[in-house]
Image 1 (tube, rainbow, N blue to C red):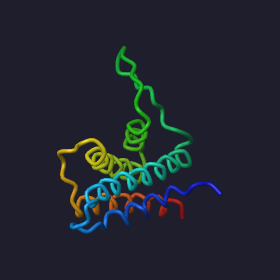
Image 2 (cartoon, rainbow, N blue to C red):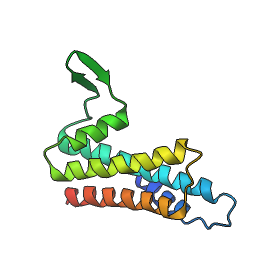
Image 3 (cartoon, rainbow, N blue to C red):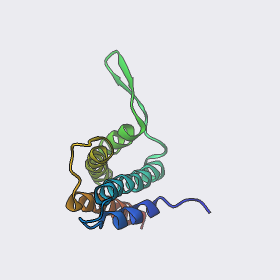
Image 4 (tube, helix red, strand yellow):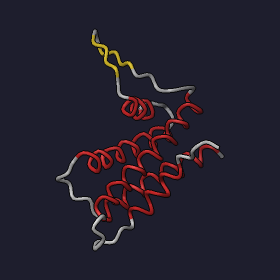
Length: 136
């Protein structure tokens, strides 16, 4: 049986509920945002492949300059550039969630509170719900 990326969202929700007096509370909250992001990213990547016919293009041409986009940036930009309002909404939410994940994973000066971790989990759930609605 293959891994279900949705389990990252379940784990993220569990980690986000860390209580303040837990010495690992901030680590758990940061991990919650990261796990929630990756659950949403993989769901959005699968959605993109299914609805828009494959992975997003990673090479961007602007005038004479060509640039290779990172996979995550390419997915978000591709979703945001689609004519489908649903795809654009998924791309916008994923971009917001990616910003929270970057804070969680790279900014040690950013205090990661319960509401911030819960917000990341809520964004991931919203993305999952939009994709599920599109599949029905």
